[in-house]
Image (spheres, helix red, strand yellow):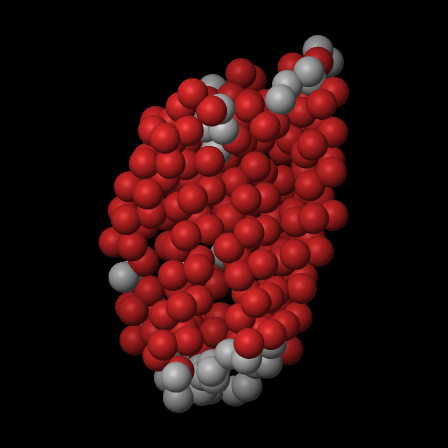
Length: 228
């Protein structure tokens, strides 16, 4: 096996392990809260019932897998920093990220459909504490917004694009991205497609990172507002 295919296999394996671990945890948590009479939308709402544990798992899973991604870039003679941003295009890339963030808000409205399908048996989140809010910013805004983009966009394009075709690789990894967030019923695939556009348009990961981390923080702010 030549080095290009070997690196693609490593990238695919790392991202698959991350996906299966987090998705498996989410399924376990949801089904431990199952009660007769629940529909699937109710069940999915319990994935984040214990947000402290959920955020902790997200942080640990991503940070444990991140060194493998960093090592793959290093051993391949590639600069992860340059894949994230370059000074000469930083302004343009940030603008593309902000545009992608605005576009992400449109399909995010579809989440209201999910809530409309829930019954009284669905989990109802209370107002977050200061500690939970800080942990949410760390887990969703920083770790998910940065590390997930390295795996689900960066690893796809850099290591698998030359083997299976860039768009095919990006879409395949986007399917895994949606699997990891299965409880939003495909919304992550739609949103991830916008972030693919941002990545291809800018050529750097900073654009989808801004959109990803930004929409997560906005969602966190919205949660605080509606439960306040």
